Length: 100
Figure 1 (tube, one colour):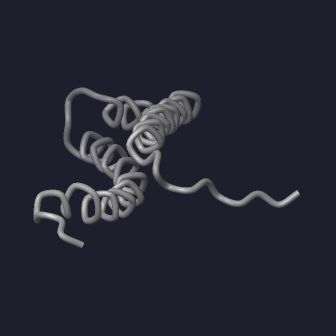
Figure 2 (cartoon, rainbow, N blue to C red):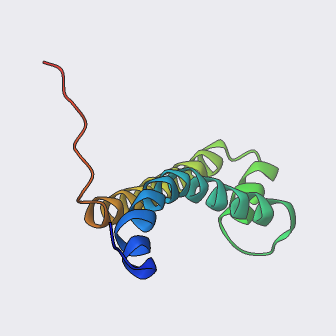
């Protein structure tokens, strides 16, 4: 249709790829944070994973669950931020159909 390569990238390729990028980002954010905490759990001297490991070693069930709840809340907050950025960047995308 007479578009230059830069216009084609900006108006066609990038918006198409952004939906796939954000869908992957929703999954990878949670896995990345859980992976960091597992790394802290296995070999660290500080951090949430270390605190969970310390609580587990003295049979502090409340401390273990508190650490897991904190991790879950942090992941949910970051996922909500990713969702907010997605809504702001992908305004062109049609809304999902609702059934009444």
